[in-house]
Image 1 (cartoon, one colour):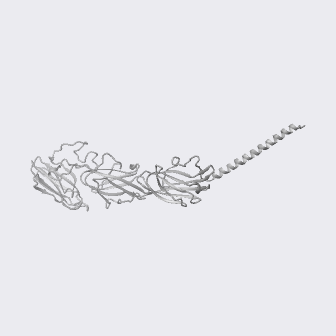
Image 2 (tube, one colour):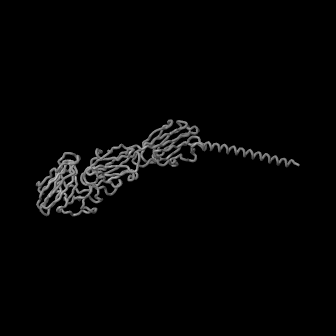
Length: 454
């Protein structure tokens, strides 16, 4: 039997159950709406954010895109009214490789709807603007930039956005801009930098797709030490540098292209600098800095400053560029040590000197002594311009002069010259090299000399 009290309780239970059912139904509908909204948002590739939590809305919170390569990046994002609030700006950080390459950054902003956003690019401090767009539809421009860190901002405002859902695709794609290639394709005919002595010379250019080496001609009078480096990140892994001696075609490796305390010791003369890439493909810029420092004995431009011929000796078997790190001359074995070399020539010993004479110093003097009467034999060779050798005594009396010996087998060298003369002992003698050409700048030369019994 149902009493009124029981009926009342049962009705309350039924109403409570109905209310709970209605609440559960409402909750299910709400969850369904949220899931539908999330699914719809997840179906697109946009990653919404908003000003409220500060996600990538400042320089400090910029999304780091890392170092851009030539493939570039494509970023799909949104601004304006988003599910969690209102977003007005997005910041991105990117880097271009630190090198001496020049870069051209292509920037494209595809907006939907159009003309609702604009761009601004900042330097690595994030405070100095280096480019600001005007909010045109589908921004598209190219910007020259060097290696470094940059920030780019995509932004809008409340009035422009008008509570709309704005989507965009930002494309950043860098392209390496080649330096102007000034090098030659071979030593013969390569552009000349003149003398490498004096201020450092900067060489820059760009390899083509085949990565053919670049060549530059130069000369340095007197003995010198070639010092320099390829510039840029990890240069020794990207470049190989060598010096080519045109007299014999020898290719002398220039260390590993990095700066060293000591340079490459070479004879005076004309040379070719060869720069080539190592293990790289495609276009590539290069830049190097080189200077030649005097590493020889000071040339004797008059009798009072004449060098001892024996002191200038290179040794009959000494190869150019293989002198080590102390001196070109065979008597100078230890750094800082100045040996006391006699001016007396040893009988039958072959003395070899390689030096320079030209318009700047048209005469070179070398002195020697004889312990007894000797027959002197002398040859002058490796001449690219006219010069002669003379044997004189201390008073300047001419005792012998060279004459042409045969013909030259090379079109870039003059025929060698020679002399023979018998000289008494006990007197001081000089070999004088005279430059008789008006061609600038001068010529390297080789001097070979020995004394025999008369």
